[in-house]
Length: 162
Ligand code: HEC
Image (cartoon, rainbow, N blue to C red; front, side, top):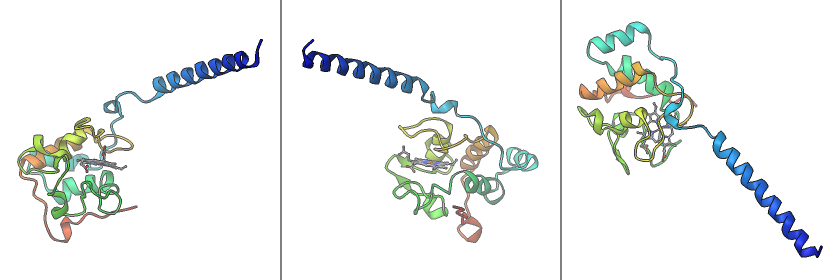
């Protein structure tokens, strides 16, 4: 058989081989990000109950969740040009995709929308690891609905643990 024909055959098998690998890789990639597992509650049972039955308190019910699950990425140093949750002023800004927090309107707030599901091409948040628990999502939504009060002093500053 002429050399160039042998070469063609070899290339054909390499091509088929690569195609198989691609196919397997596509099947092995995790399905929809919305099927990511739910995480563990950061808040105690008592705190969750209080937040669900009474007014949500930013410092007691929201800050610990954002500190444990969001702010390590969502600060100006780690994620330039994206939402920063370091303090009230930063969090109340708008980004390219819209407003992060619209007090009174969880449905218009990316902070809520992007933790529920893939939204505006942004994968479900947190970007890595487990999703917010149902309780955390409910409390975050309720907090925004109640006006998203976030103190501007030291108690409103989130600690960034890297
Ligand atoms: C591991 C890092 C990481 C963590 C943790 C994380 N995010 Fe994100 N987040 C990102 C990245 C990266 C983007 C940009 C995604 C894109 O462009 O597709 C993003 C985008 C977003 C956006 C869209 C607005 C923007 O900044 O562009 C929102 C809102 C958001 N995240 C909310 C949250 C919330 C709420 C949490 C905590 C529950 C969280 N994220 C946790 C990395 C993270």
